[in-house]
Image 1 (cartoon, rainbow, N blue to C red):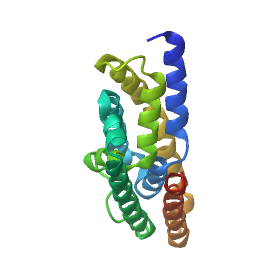
Image 2: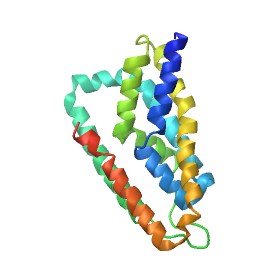
Image 3: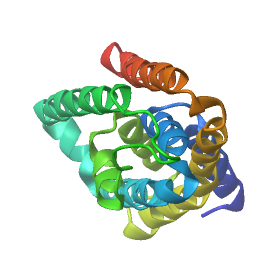
Image 4: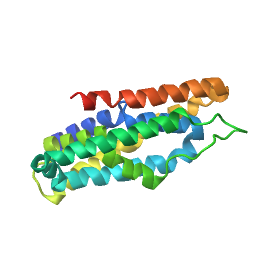
Length: 197
C-alpha cells in the first residue's frame, strides 16, 4: 500500500474510532462503573472483534448486503434491539458498594460479538475497505484491518480511562444513577443517525 494512502487510512481509523459511538459510550460507562482494569477484556474484545470484522468485510461480506438487501435490514433490526437492551442494562446498573460496582463488565467475547450488531462498526468497516483497500485481495483487506487495530487501541483506551477518572465524581449513588441514565440515553441517541440515514 502506498504510504500516503496508509497514513490517510490511519487518520480515518483514529478519527472514526475516537468519536462518540456505541462502543465508546459503553467504555465510558464501564470505566466509570468498573474501572480501567476490569474494562480491559471489553476493550480487547472491541479491538479483536472489530479488526476481524474489517478483515471479513474486506473479503466480500459487504457484497452480500448489496446482493441481499433484506439481510442488511434484518441485521439493523437485531442491532437496534440489542443496543436498546444494552442501554437498559446501563441505565439500571447499581450504585457502587464498597468500592465496586454491582454487576459485571462486558466480557471479551461479548464485546467482540457486539461489533457484528454495531451499526457504526459496519459503516466504519465498509467505508475503510471501500476507500483504502487498493484491491480485493486478502492482503489489502488485512492491511486495512491491521491499520484499524493499531489506531483503535489508543482511541478506545481514552474513553475507558475517562470513565475511570469520572469515578471520583460518581461516588455519590445519585450522581452515578444520573450518569448511567445519561449514558443509556446517549447510546440510544447514537442509533438515530443510522436509523434515519
